[in-house]
Image (cartoon, rainbow, N blue to C red; front, side, top):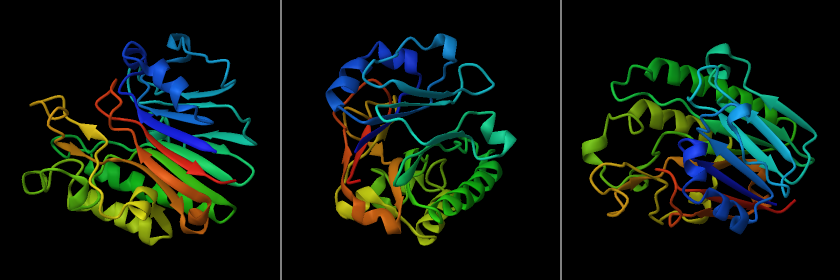
Amino acid sequence: MKIISWNVAGFRACLKKGFADFFTASDADVFCIQESKLTAEQNEFHPQSHPYEYLFPAVKKGYSGTLVYSRIEPLSVKYGIGDEEYDNEGRTITLEFKDFYLVTVYVPNAKNDLSRIPSRMRFEDLFRAYLLDLSAKKGVVVCGDMNVAHEEIDIKNVRPNIGHAGFTYEERGKMTELLAAGFTDTYRHFYPDRVQYTWWSYMGKARENNVGWRIDYFIVNNGFTDKVSDAVIYDDIMGSDHCPIGLTVNV
């Protein structure tokens, strides 16, 4: 099964920048989207190839939101993690398949002034507990914008970004906690020393100069690692300030 994940930074805008071409060319069985920023009425993309479509919009229009297209009908679908603050922002969708749960997530941004760090920390703890509960039942695959560059290898300019949103010790520590709880960063599993990024600022020709951050991930529970055959970053694909990432699982 091939799975693609992409923070599109506004689905309607991304559709005007070649999204459909990549969607078709990627030939994914399941395509997960974060930061869709749209309601069901606003979504005009309904591919016949992927008849199972799940949208979780934020209560606030034009903000956050997740969306999944699947060729395969899931056994069940769950929206949210059971907490009103984050569920009102449409941050997670869980699809249950025969062999594993697939969770797509848009982790809250701490904000430039770090004012949302306390809320972000609460989300991290709730989300980790949610994933651990799922992993007690069957395999777990998590994909999405985790809004953190975990290690120094995951960010171009280390020193000037220490303590900034997405590279604070608190956020990086929560990713360490998640992995220590029994999960694997699949990209680092396959490519421990490779430097590749998934997000670039729109400022200062960052994309052109590849001054980026790796903040989008596929993470699996350790018991499912042997089912994963490759993790990919499509850093040549435009259309958003993020690029798509992919995972192949053998189930």
